[in-house]
Length: 231
Length: 192
Ligand SMILES: [Zn+2]
Ligand SMILES: [Zn+2]
Image (cartoon, each protein chain N blue to C red):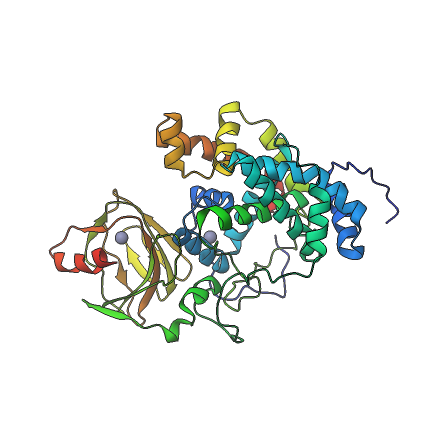
């Protein structure tokens, strides 16, 4: 542990991480697409959770090795070999997306693939109160993710949650009763959390958010509810 | 290099050697041995997650085609062979049944925050991680092992598992957490 390495980590390492529940569901492949995007984006920014995710994949491998096998059909091996050797009819490129070289990036690659651009190309929809949103386009399974931008020094109105809300900071930082959240930090909020996240002064705070139900505003700014219900 | 392996090779090291031969020399005998072990397991996995036997067979074949084609991209320092094949089969399943992409990180992403200044990890390369996890899974109480298998194989959200088993959601989650906690404890020695 005391060995000094020449390779220092670039940028801050997140302090608030993914839950085991999320990592398990991601490894198992039972997570919806929006939440999977959230997990993949955090993994890009968090070496610690990458190790945890690798461990969960290993669990999958061990369980696969352990499963009671079911015989393949008689000609399976030769069928596979002849298909395998046929010229590959292009595995679909893992996802459509811009192929241009990127030098440095604000958004993790999984997010850039959906938006087709980095943070500077995002078309924000202003919602008033210093809040803007940009829905993640092209999610195939009906789940929903969006980016939320809160102007420096301003707060999202006080609210609680009907379902689960997953938030991860991509730029800037915010604070609420649970602490300070900077780039890569994850906050999971549910019906027990009633909070008013406030962006730090000096820089707009941009977050990726995944909600499975509309937020419930507890303050007086009920008008903002439209913002979230529309999404 | 001169290690002899039996054709129904079953140890993780044997699997790595088979992968090496497939990648280096398109060795069909090595592939046949690997296929003999993993094909029927991939099929069983797909059936357990809800496929009919016919589509499990078809998808398992597709997965094994990918194993052959992507053999060169297998990195024995990153994962064991069973893990690598599990991820291929899982992604096939998601493609086929969930009608969604599975967002995954890109190792070459300029936004990637690299690993910290800890020593390079040899635990995966040497198979210690999967051995430790194997031991941990083998010694889990039945109810925790069963929950882990459900969570990994049945393509159900934790809330669906709760509804189906009649267990409270909190119980489902706590059994999973206990199982994972035990594995993490087993892995502690590699984390330093
Ligand atoms: Zn993390
Ligand atoms: Zn909230």
